[in-house]
Image (cartoon, rainbow, N blue to C red; front, side, top):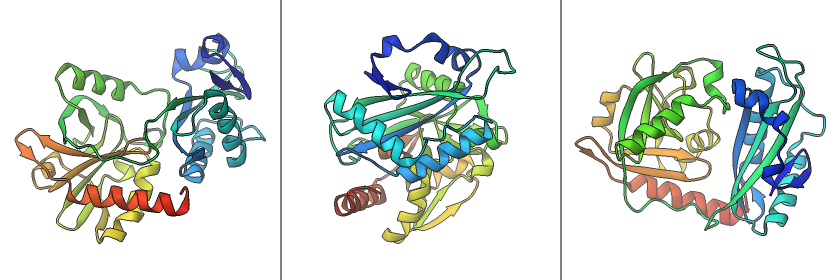
Amino acid sequence: MINFNTELQEIEKLPITALARAARYGDGVFETIRMREGKLLFIEDHYFRLMASMRILRMVIPMEFTPEFIVDQSLRLAEERGFENGRLRLQIVRSGGGAYTPNSNTVDWWMELDALETKDYLLNEEGLKVELFKDHYVQPGLLSTLKSSNALPYVLGSIYAQENQFDAVLLVNDAKQLVEANYGNVFLVEGNVLRTAPLDDGALRGVFRKNILEWAKDIQLEVQEKSINPFDLQKADEVWITNTIRGIEWVGQYRKKSYVSTKAKEMTAMLNRKLNVLGSL
């Protein structure tokens, strides 16, 4: 079951007209939000990123689109699905037809909700094995900061990882700087410095990324948004891949270099404590 424009229905009944422009041109954006005990985590951050993305794509934002509306509609779907810990995907697409020039800038939207086994973030027990993906580059610019339906570099990177028995791949921009992974932002820990690529290099404006830059100070890490050369991977003590669904995943191996997970464990434990005290963030 999905929630399509406030109507609960089977996903097979999603009208082809709602899919047309997204399928033909990648003309859409989405947010992936973690639901914890019926609450959407970081909802304000997700909401403001979604509104900014829709404005950048010159979509008409429906008057009813508020954080409260998104929460209410997600809870209707959660009640129908019968669970309260899950992965919510909110997809926004430009409705109507047209070629490159659309007939309308109004939107259709739908929500999908898949169950998660636990309410807490769990750190992976075994470190990830990763490699650089250099077949295609991330092109820095305003569009690279959006969660767009046009996600071919991430799709092709994920296929490369699967074909070569890697857990994830690290993406670079056209200046050969490391910007992110195929499913999240990348952080390097070296000593007491936590570093991630700046948005100007092409990194996704990740919701979890934004909050990690604030939380890191609570475990005495100095944060930096600074360009990352792939050679910097050899000097790092830890490498993380982060997103709002999985939280922090630590990398165990990149080529012949091995990493630990000391700060990743601290950060994950601190986040779960915050969630247990506040209910949501």
